[in-house]
Image 1: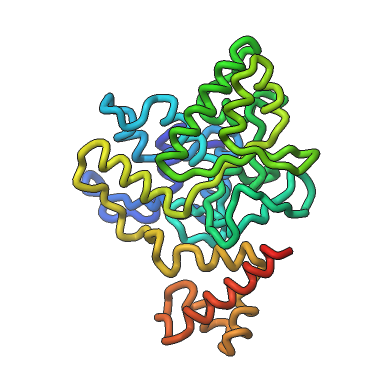
Image 2 (image 1 turned 90 degrees about the vertical axis):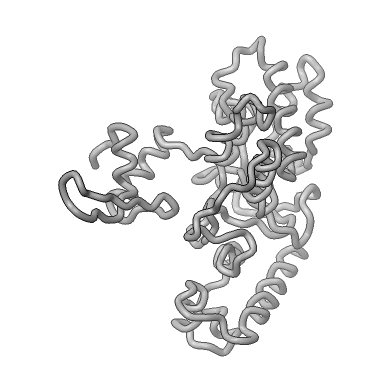
Length: 317
């Protein structure tokens, strides 16, 4: 499989069609969908190799402007969080995030789930906790190989003598972003299964050796499902803009198609199971979920009730 050579090589993978020819050629690109076939495989290969990363357009263009919107450290941390967004195959969200519902989350190891007391039952969260083998499980702050949260958030490889100060700086930056975006910072002890909140982590970090105790924990980060709108609102207000336009092709946070399928995937509910509950044929339900057909009267509330029932049942487990 050919490697991706440079920025233009990556750009080309997202090309969908070409109109015209010669100097009048117009190329069309889609950056909200994963390319099909060989292009998608090459892009995924580049991501895994760390050669392609996801960043926030708002922070890259408006964030570090000298107007006090976001400082350099906050920008880097936010880029790290967005790059580690746990994504769902069925998600219709702008960020393709896999929505976490309630306070049952994967344990530090294995297939079991544990209760996180820092998350609220029935609440919906975006998980900034990795994909692949670390899917939804987060990372250590530094990690055995030095590739933990500090590395992912632009701190680089931190020398041992600098670790106490850098861990404090990282946690302080998280605290500032938490106030702006409503983030939940939750660190789990992989052995005891107990949770530590941000304030406790900050207290621990003030000790000279506190970073070592913190680095034994697995740090997970969660945000409200409308964090992108909150970020846009914050940038608009801080910079004095009239607004930041959202592309019409991107669903907004309160649209029906935003995460209904992601909730189903999270709960293990198939289109066939939902169709059986509704007394409808599976192809028809699939067409409605994909917005190929309009929602008939009464169908959406029944879907919501069914999913809410299953979510309540999972929270009780």
